[in-house]
Image 1: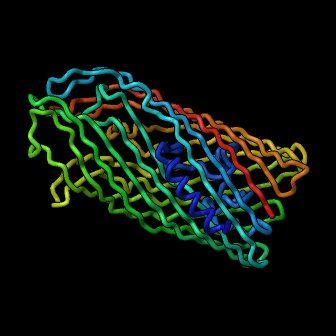
Image 2: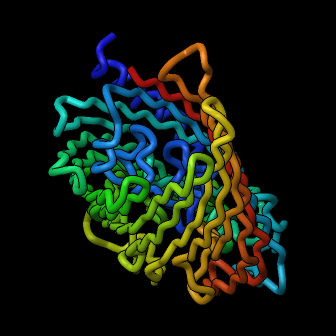
Image 3: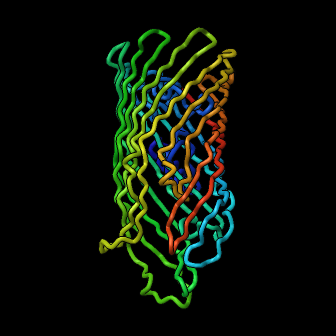
Length: 421
């Protein structure tokens, strides 16, 4: 089977798997790409260990000889449990339960292929998911008029090219064809007419780009810089109301909807230093422009506002530090820590994304079987300690006022197989 056919088949499988996607990084970003889980993704733009560098810094392709195929998958289990602290029901309806654990298992696969076309030119392609989210509550919970299910999935196809200018400087660039699909549900308070629900779904596709540079400042030291562009979407879809029998269709008509969404740009600076035959150390800092998400406004096709939610997110920083210990030619052990800021302020936190600052603690290992040259198996685990998140979302009188605190955490498990030939 040709590589182009493999990529097409994998893209279909990825979209199916990502229907249960959930963000492991702050906001709804997915940093779970490649073998870096065990290092808390420290040094991503400089490490260039395998073809997953296409995502973190395409210039890193120049560090890879021959050809390589990388297949990876991350399983993410977040936890988001709400504790009520004086919520007020909307429109005289029953208060309801605390909603259960809104965090759901997610599976995030990725695929990367690299090829050293000449001694100065490299080509590659990646299939991944830079963003993803799913939260889901019990249908009778306190905040049901504000949120029940929230799902956002992306699929990103990223052809890349890299050029080795000299032994010190390499540059790289890529195009990103990215699709987005979103579904939102909540209960609807029809007052005396009873309680119903609404489902909104939409999708779009758009183009972005990413660039990077890699500097070999010494035989054992690399510095990488990378930038991924924002991607602008006009998400179009439909709204469907499920009305009680007493509510006429004209009171809440179904129809077409649209919204404008910008998924943010990011920039990274990374360092990789090999101290001796046993030890590597790596670190990085990443900035993400989440302040692009000011409002989530959904409109009917005639321009009338269906819903308006102020978000007012902030730009964020992520700082990470990692180490590798080379036990022998077959085994490498990994460790890492990271601090990941949330873009969500206490004032504007919503039930759809009850996010907060998080600290990563990670470890992992790589095994290269002696009998299979070019083959490597990586596995990693990270636990995310997330700060408790207070919420006071006032949507009275109809939708109630949600007051309480979320207890948050997440676990990330990653497995990757790479083959160089």
